[in-house]
Length: 460
Image (tube, rainbow, N blue to C red):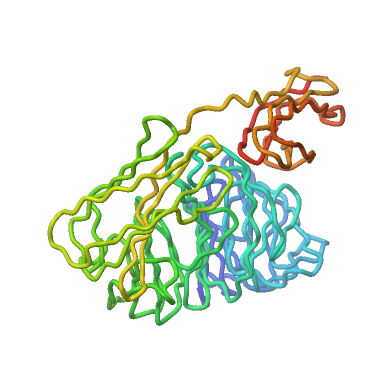
């Protein structure tokens, strides 16, 4: 080849190579080449030996491939493909032997990276764009995805605001390994830094937060992201990486500086000079009115205090108490704290420790959860299966709004309702489902102190 190869992808029993070349093995083959185990060409083929009648002739470079819903998404700098009448904006789908276009109406001019994220095709161009279910989402748009919310450990709907990130080098998706793994990472490298959308809904964070609180500053670009098992890897043109023990490396304390040779793995352990090294952290309750927290430090270096933070299903973490730390110690020290939860509502309560050093730096412990005594709110919908209407029933324990969202099984919101009640109210609301087609749906009920998702079967 007389140019640069920018991406490689296997699709339909053939190998596709894209780049800015115009010749392969002495043949005039521009920007994309297909290897079918015998020769290079621009003709797509199927596993059954069928060949397309139209070659893949592009007018500019092909930068990236991604298999999306059984189709080969092709992105690049091109604006035309021979045989496709529609104007292109650097993106086309190869569906076996035929082409499909995804017009963005002038929003995208050239595409550097493509990645699948759950049901979405994430597009890296001058910023981040998302294509899902025949619709485009642009920077700062919000869409709904289904997943396991952090600290909740049940399936719920999570809003995702498309981040504004420029100069994108690579995009990588690392799915969660199970329900208890809150990290579902969409990782974007750009501007000599790494951004990650993790299991915390809607937030874009610095760092590459697989299940450890590392952040990384680099002296060069990260051009390729990946993982081996659960170990993340970076590749690029950098020579030094500074690893911090918190997401925000601007204010976090430095834990390690690594001289690298253009590739870096995060398989290392944290440095031993962290202010506090915890041996254990437990929470329990005998009466569901008070919670006993206990933790043990193995070593402490310049430690100031522990801040006990609590959250419930519908609230963020807030500080509920402070316990003084030893400051300096090389021996095991046991700590306890008792928290009053008699007025806390919800299904679960969650705790973490904020371990603060004397210089103001801090790090967080792992999160511990405790299931609360079940309050029978009686949230239900009936009849189920339904035809035209269903009735929502529940008993309010706290005054406020009740929101009901209906989603299809792909996570698209179809209906939204809201009512306001006082506490001790008995809720009975009829919901019209006559406009829904036959099939299964998710009904999410969110009250001030509870969230419940139920399946609804609609008959026709």
